[in-house]
Length: 242
Image (cartoon, rainbow, N blue to C red; front, side):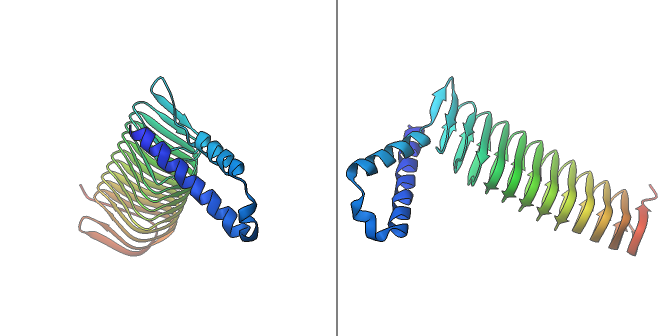
């Protein structure tokens, strides 16, 4: 029943957007379009929005749906699946799955997964995963995970992880983790780690760690490890005594 409602709403919405586009771009010729053309256009859009259920897995081009198993789409705004939810291109406003969610190119406003939340190229407004929250190339507004929160290339506004929070290349506003907070190349405003806080090349405003704070070829304004502090540190390793 849910998918029937989503199918009807999505088909009508996309049809209205299409006809609005025609009206805006060709206002003088609007009346020349026949009823047959309008019905044909609606039928094509409805077909593209159709969620086809094959053995519990749903396949669609533009449709929005909920699946008891996995959901595969080319471009969906909404997807909820018991196992995996995959979208080829965005924007995706909502993805939730019991295992993995992934958007390969586009914008993901919200991703929640029991295992991995992935965006390949684009923007992730929020990612939450039981294992890995990953943005390969783009911007991440917020990542939260029980495993690893990783941004390879781009901007990470906030990362929180029970294992490792990592930024390979780019900018991280805030990194917080129960183990290691790592920036390979870039700028980190704040790093907080229960184990090690590390920046290899770049700049860090503040590093706070329980075990070790490391700055490679980078400048750290303030390093703190338990009761030890160090200011304007370059090629510095500050370790706890215990």
